Image (tube, rainbow, N blue to C red; front, side, top):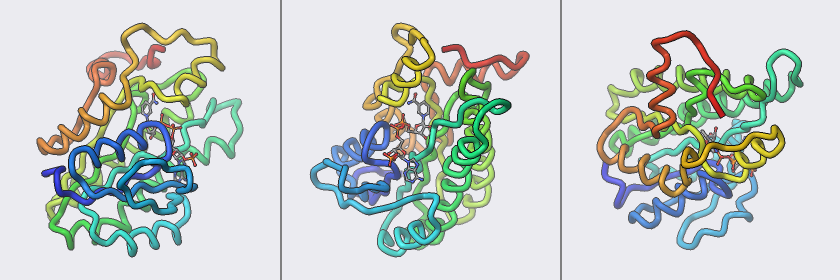
Length: 237
Ligand SMILES: NC(=O)c1ccc[n+]([C@@H]2O[C@H](COP(=O)([O-])OP(=O)(O)OC[C@H]3O[C@@H](n4cnc5c(N)ncnc54)[C@H](OP(=O)(O)O)[C@@H]3O)[C@@H](O)[C@H]2O)c1
């Protein structure tokens, strides 16, 4: 779909990859609803800010009513701190599943009729290469991303009839504060030249949407997907 002239809604636009999406969408000539749980933190000129918690059904419904002109939905927001599956805190494990899977699903269910009324449009879900492997220290998050990948494939089939493109953005390592904090806490030296800049990632993603692609992978994600034909292995950090 054409990004110039589109009306986009971005979840989690106050920081990280979501912030980069909102900035790049504006630069490409889209109208942008930049949403966040705390919209007062959004500092991007020229966007419409909206309070939105994807885990809160009334907040999601209100956003769908307010942003009734959306034809490009960017599901970026997620709780990325699931921790370990066996010894970890069950509330954290549920929280990462709640936002990645049920929150993304709630957004799609609320906005599918909006997109249909606006000509079909597109949905882009921000997944992760860990959906195809796992990541030591954050296995619960990886499992939630696997569920979100399955969700993405399912809704793509269900929404094809109304002309909605459903694109999976699958990054490996993206240079946001959240990634650097995780690496510092776990004593991980991130490999040189393997961390994608958020700005480069969102450009790749929007080029993919413009080209009608159903999956957009950065180089690490392409490696992770190719490795699926072999035995399971953890995502190498
Ligand atoms: N960074 C990476 O290496 C990497 C790699 C692959 C995939 N990803 C994916 O990329 C996306 C963004 O990652 P990031 O690194 O930019 O993360 P981030 O900087 O931690 O940002 C996460 C965003 O999601 C928001 N959020 C969390 N739960 C929410 C909820 N219930 N409702 C609304 N907003 C909520 C956060 O809002 P608050 O500020 O209110 O907490 C924040 O804006 C995630 O889906 C992540 O899984 C990241």
